[in-house]
Amino acid sequence: MSSRIAATLIPGDGIGPEIVEATLAALDALGVPFDWDIQQAGLAGIKSAGDPLPDAVLDSIRRTRLALKGPLETPSGSGYRSSNVRLREAFKLYANVRPARTLIPGGRYDNIDLMVYRENLEGLYMGYEHYIAMDGDPEAVAIATGVNTRQGSHRLLEYAFEHAIALGRRKIAVVHKANIMKALTGIFLDEARKLHKQKYQGRIEMQEVIIDACAMKLVLNPWQFDALVTTNLFGDILSDLVAGLVGGLGMAPGANIGADAAIFEAVHGSAPDIAGKGIANPVALMLAAAMMLDHVKLGEAAARLRRAINDTFNVDKVRTGDLGGMADTKAFTQALVARIRNG
Image (cartoon, rainbow, N blue to C red; front, top):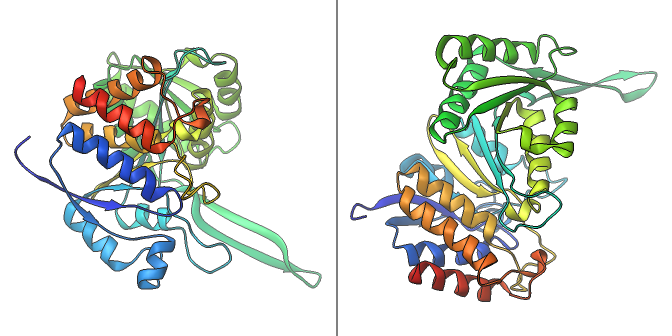
């Protein structure tokens, strides 16, 4: 681990600085060679630069092409666009990757190990919306236009197939609503069929599942799935559903992979109600950091971090309050760091 790796670090809002500090302690214990460029965004960005996503943040990520970020808050009703959406657009972060794995056994669902690949730039999240006035009501009719392209679908699907195969996944389910939205999601399903036949047949099994049936099946029997790939809106919904199978968003890391950069994050929000109380669970961001380590080919360090989290939970029985434990953020982090150093 001699060569240094430049990376942007965005502490974020609310509990963001607390879970970032805990995650950095774990990474320091691993001895990983990141050179952090610390940048402020979200509410902190508004205070420092009058913008929730200042130019300095974008410039930093353009230089490092790699970022770890805490949750960002976008003020409601202020005219500011979501910083997360702006980051995806600025760096063409077309693939959202959300693993869900059981870390604490004995819950309602056990032995869950799923991957969700979500298209991150297209679909109904393009923001093409407007109102039509009727009978004196300026907002009588609301219209939204979804846009899926064959190129965008191909790019995400190819990444999902390749990534799932590299992880040793046996099958991947293409989730769609092509029976109703025949063009908008039909193009995604059609591209999946073509791509699988051309490049991946015999390497990974492909299932086809309609979105509503998929949601039901994930609740009834999630073990029938191995990996899921889908369009933007469906992926947003299913990735949260899958997180619920393993304990909620506090256990959910995410990666945003693009042509120009990769940004890793905790999926949960900034939780301002508990900010500063020292009780936040840092595991989602720690797991995101493990994904970041995998991305930069430090797989051994990633495995050590994941193993330390597992052992802290299940051998040492040290858990934060949201997981039924008594530890605060500092106590959990100290136990985890001890595990890393002794493991």
